[in-house]
Length: 174
Image: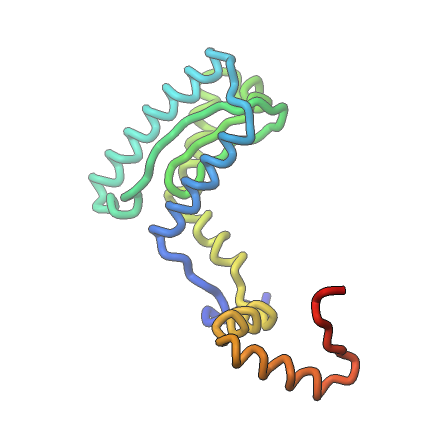
């Protein structure tokens, strides 16, 4: 398979990933109802606290603490029939009610959560976010346009109008 050269991908700094993750998680919590099922909530929170304590201990024992620096571990259960759970880069964890019967008990929750935490700690989310920001020619052009002064932009528009007979000038009041 063909690989995109690294020069065409924006690499997002870890601090920005953590900030974006925290913001996204907050948005999800605002838009999605939290579960009132105390059995589900207790299970996810208890398993979460135990797993994250183990992750912190492991990272400390294997000089990798810096890779989870800034993580703000949170555990919530959301109202949805969806069979899903996830962990944001930064440690924000969500389980949907729909997956809880599949998990059956704390052991099942631990398997699913351990898997999701492993993705976050391995920074797979960071890779996905960076891959989504591939510098297409259109994005490169948009960035260049945003960097132009008003005069430079006006000159560019005049030039494009002269060079392209399919374009017409509009006052914008139509």
